Image (cartoon, rainbow, N blue to C red):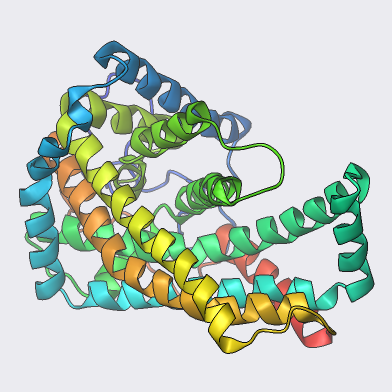
Length: 385
């Protein structure tokens, strides 16, 4: 990739620039057995740049007024060309459907692994949690919630690696197209691997934010999700919409956040419309899956008592959830390609013929090691149970 012309900071050049082949970046594959360094302290703190980006997005929204015209339904037509391009690219580059199907499979396996923890927990514990809920005893309920959240974070961290890789591969297909280079499965994966460390961390962070919002929206006994919390969530989604293509281009967290906000500043109509159109479809699929799951449980005669009844209910819920995820797996590439096209329209990107990172068979990568470790840990728990 060629460096961004508007960057006036001292940030390092993108991973694809051949000017510094000796530069060691987290997640970068090298031609020796030396492990690439973990992110520096400054780089890890750089994750907070996304929080700052959300604040900037909220400031932009505030400047537009409480009911910005940019959110009007008429502006959704502004993304027509982006969506048409995304659909056309998917029809021409069939590997994009492969990456979408693999994401579907990863999420399905992740849900199945998450459900296993419910089976491992004795029924007596769930009975105590139910009594605690009825008697408003927070201690037991909090302990169970923390245990589920801990397991959920482990699942998210593990699943985020392949999801980040396949999302980045979809963006790579667009980059190869605009650079007039052939898009193949190998070329897309090779391009996606260049900054996999940062991509993984961001995908895991975004996954936690998304999961928290989904759980918070579910009906509950006390407390409701406020409009302010929902606004903050969408400010996060819009502010980080351009982070994926920026990270695939080889930028660090701070520059990715800066470029993502620049999309919102330079092309507010397209940025907001692409994100909100995707969110609108997510809402439709999510509500449909929620209603469908309810009728599915009623018609399937799911047991509401007995041994491991809660586990069997969540296992049955996997069918409508898996179907909904399949629908979203087809819609996700449209969003990724559309936002990537917006990114390259604002910030030109060119994939150079000579990659700066050698593809040696002796590569040992820290992100891969961590992912394999997490995966082995999950498989060990599953097999031992």
